[in-house]
Length: 262
Image (tube, rainbow, N blue to C red; front, side):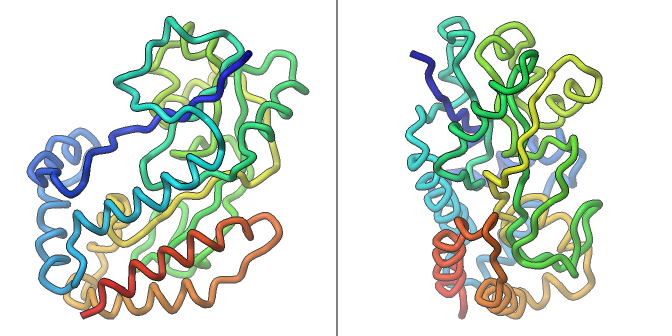
């Protein structure tokens, strides 16, 4: 019987994580080496919940959604690609992203309808409040936003078969940027689903958000205000039939944010 896997990327035990180890990761992704170290220092100075505890709380919320899918949750380092069956299904994901409980049923159905597909691409939901503008979302983006249905592979919105993982290799399918390149040039044919079956939790301590937010003048100096405004935005979030499944996690996110207030 085909198995379903969730393969989690770079998921440290946050309470014991050495922030200095974030420097190589930041440099490898074209970010300032001290980005996270410097931000965490400022965060810890104003928040009742320290940076590492906050990141662990985000991981805990996300993990609950992964468990709800019924899939096997595995660290990438523990995945034996040769043991995979061709019709297994694998979703690579960051440790703070959320999945709809029926994501595998939805994506397998879409893949079955496309004979040459080696997986599936679906709609991703943006959750969060930005204080700086990114290339895709910005300060005016709603707290819950349905990203466009296009060929962009985000950190959470694609599934590949065991056959694709073995024949294309983890270097192609595991990282979302490489998977998107392979999708665009035809090396990784994916079916399309118009469902919104995953969400990116763009919380204030997410690396991408830290990078763009801290480029906004005054953001770092007014972190308590940013925390309060994020809670307000979460409480006022408008949900649709496609995004309503995120409501419990948004509630949990709000609760954690309240713990941060001085």
